[in-house]
Length: 417
Image (cartoon, rainbow, N blue to C red):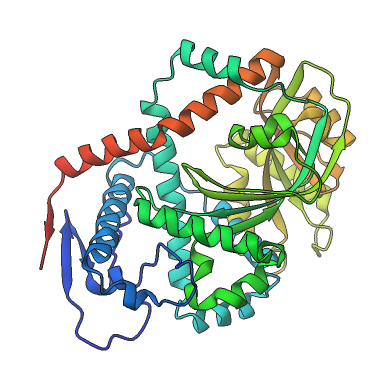
């Protein structure tokens, strides 16, 4: 069993640390509160140490650390979530690529802002767990009525199914139950970036400018490939009718953070309804991998998976230990079948659910493809699916609030002055 401890200190302490709260079997230290920054000041000049002199703000962060502890303890006790460590490592690699840094450069950057790589990795691990647990609770407790979906679907603007966008998407993360102060301050910071056109900076420049604010802990940036209008969250929908290339939409507050999107490009691509959606896993070996016959290796992998309960993720983790060949990758795709390249589309069209293909050459290199799910959606189904997701978004905070209150009432929590 994995036990979470919150007494990891990021910087040198000038005074003796002290316990400020007990949460069941876990402790929270004064340094934990002072080293958790959930907001960025709109004038980018105040330090969080000065902010934390405000007793009410200190209490807010302490309260959020208590909530984090309660949520993370669910993972210990119930084991309802299985962590895919390969997915976590992929996420770290994406961060390195996004920041255009080598592993050593990233280590140095973290060190310069007073954060060890181990602590950063652990934070990402915890964030992944919290997100997955909250999503699980959300879908388990959400009651969306048919008439609610119908009402949203009726008021939804007509979607141009043939319109596609390339987006730069910036997300500022928020804690599970953010205060209005935190939402306002991060929203102000997002507006500042838009006004100063600093969202146009690449993430490395953005980090360099605001490294003293530990921006790395709250900001995520990614640029999409072509994405259909119907696949963009409904919170952006009212902007998509009139938006042009180069326009910026936001900041928009959602349950998962505060969003800015920049329209990098727009095109029209003829789509025929109904739309076939596929979820698939692609397991590949990069062409640079030496000392093996790639196709033979993939055939052996396919045979192993069909004869046992081993997964692609387990194989990637196992193979990554081989110093002679660490070029194994696993990607999960959820896309329209028509948006995939012809070779991948042909393979997926021939597979049954959970069936694994023979080795096929794609833009990923040589791959095995496993079909997880396939569904055919007509116009109305797509509209209702978007309405359902929109309603989940709206209900998120209320459901989380009630769930957290239940956790508190069932737990031993003591604040130590």
